[in-house]
Image 1: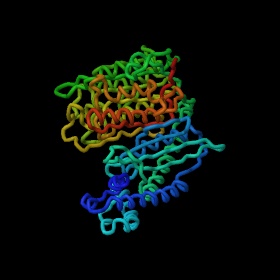
Image 2 (image 1 turned 60 degrees about the horizontal axis):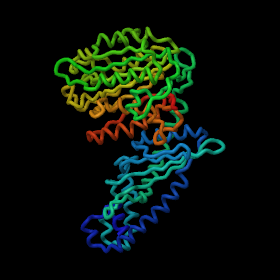
Image 3 (image 1 turned 60 degrees about the vertical axis):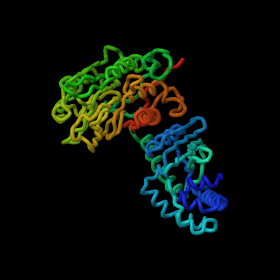
Image 4 (image 1 turned 30 degrees about the horizontal axis):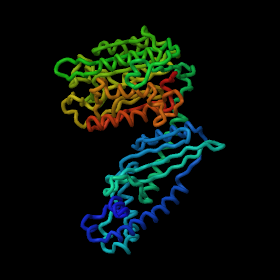
Length: 495
């Protein structure tokens, strides 16, 4: 019975064919397939599944985390001490369906030869089917005298219909070969970003060394979201500037962003208690219009708004948090923050362009700039559409060239930014604060080194926020993250 269920699950034998073939024959055929595929897969992993890199263990480990996200997989378990990362995805990910068809073309003929003796003519009803299965990837990053060794392994996981238990089985060898190649491509791309992208110690526009000096304690507000307790006060960050906007109440019949004020309140407390921003250096705004946005951030003619006047060049860390509506421009395909006095249908005239925000922030010559946006730009909201005829519009605002901006926003271009009605916060805000307060430093996501990097918060949001959106609303929501993966967002103080 064990191999009967395995064979049905892995190979997709037609039901009527299975009814006509003795179970013993199916068991033998399945066992042959498993044994032959294992020999081939072990050979592939032995030659193609191991590489050495002249990097640190931390860099190698972070590259594995980031590669998982790039490939559309989720990190399920990890342990920095042993260098172990375990990630999963619904099959055929990391392959596309087009790539899976190539696997079928390459493997089906040999597969039918393997099972010919046991199934005879019924071999023609056997086909490779990825549906209902999970791809499992194990990665080990271990130190060697010159750097690290990275090893990867692929398996499939299927449910035994007779016992409802999960079984690990061999994937087709062609799929393993293609999957290994895709992993190394993604891994090396992320490693290149870590090694050569904007780093925490590179000179900024002022020619001074850029570094992160913010330190996060577990504040009462943040701890409530993270489920922890408050601890020591943060180190001094007297020159930091924070802009916090909560746009809840919009004119006309536009739906309110129900928890935008609570999001902004939580972030104000977080900025003071965890990021060390003095209250006198917080530009705290609620339900603002276009004129107020331009007065703070500048406009297309000049970037010298209020935040520019407050920044000490080369010394100030700038934090921007926005919770409110975002909309796409139907005509120009740009992304816009929506002022409360604007119409989504005239956003090209009345909205604040997101790319203009990034351009003006890049001109501040601050020590660092980090932007958090709890909004989406699909034209949709949890309470319905904002923009008429916006279906199918996708906008991805571009960052200015040669900038060290870090941007973390709630959703991809075609997704809705959800709410957490039970907690009464934006789903993104709730999980972002929980991650920055230490959740993203836990072993599943981070290195447990009392700091949270961009890569770690991305891994945390990919697992926790995205799962919450799927569980609560049945929708896909994946944070958009742009910036140096190795940048430290916060250092954690814990008793």
